[in-house]
Length: 433
Image 1: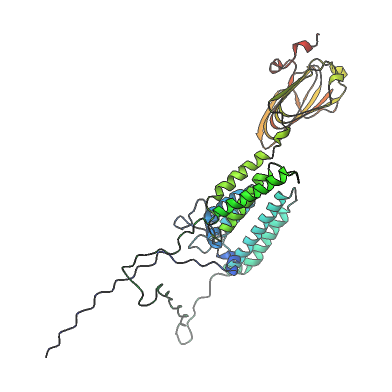
Image 2 (image 1 turned 60 degrees about the horizontal axis):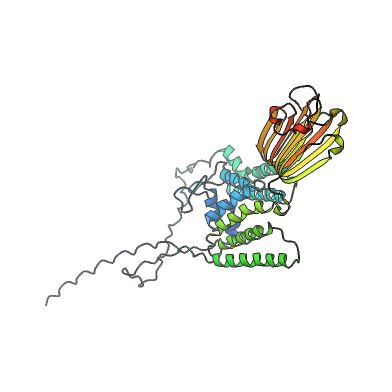
């Protein structure tokens, strides 16, 4: 009796690799170990826009890279703290697959220096938030250099001494055997034996979480705004207009931080940026502004001239061409505007010391000098009686000491004979020679 050979078993298809592995939250010790930071590259899932710092920070702390990028950009405007963190990480943190950054330091030194950079950034942020707090930048830099030398002194010493000692044969001529390499470790399969079905649909693991916090953030924001409105309407306390976007910014920022750890907040970054843009606009008290109002003053004597003029918004013209310069006798004149244009006409035969100060943005034309800038500036010029043009600085013995201040707008100080002053000088108030 002949026994037929057994049929060969069908080939077992190789199981496909899983799409992704489930992420595990880093432990507190891993978060504190900043030496494990690595800057991302173009091939990294987090992406790279400049130096890969934001992507590396987001991957280390397991948060959304977009949130880190927005926080770093916003922090730049608060004492430059975002720039301090970015530059320090750029110099110290290596890229993926590298051992050293632009400044080669060991892991202990890198961890210490990154924490020092974070502390300096925090001090800069707090000093900008709570006023003109003096920051000892020189001593902080000295501390950073000392910490760098102390934490890395062993590595630098080894570099000076050279590499490891060469392998010297024993007297018998045998070369000492090197330590055996560590055995290769293999990860277990992500499925239990006997449970793999090659025809089952593949379900990706680790899909992006839905924006669970968006609706809750909108609800909390509406509640906060409603409470502020109720307090204002009930006259329990005065609520400024800027409190509403500030409260929204705080709510959206808090939920963004929560969304980085417990569910994506989705869309709140845009709402937070809108609230941030609306905050400075609402800080101007519009109830006290006389929008579009214009004031023209043509005093014929010193007695009719007040010592100060204030206009919230609009144009103010002070024409002093009809006043006898001999009667000024070192008079002080202050003109202040929040938003608008200030124009002052002074007599040709009077010595006038004029100082124009702009707090935010605008242009100043003081006699023959013109300046415009962003961020505020001061322009001081003195016109000497009988002479053309002006000189830099303020003369102490001037007939008139003029101070013009505006937060946003333009300041013009012209001589009576200046062609630019023709349309401002009142013909009824001109002095006859």
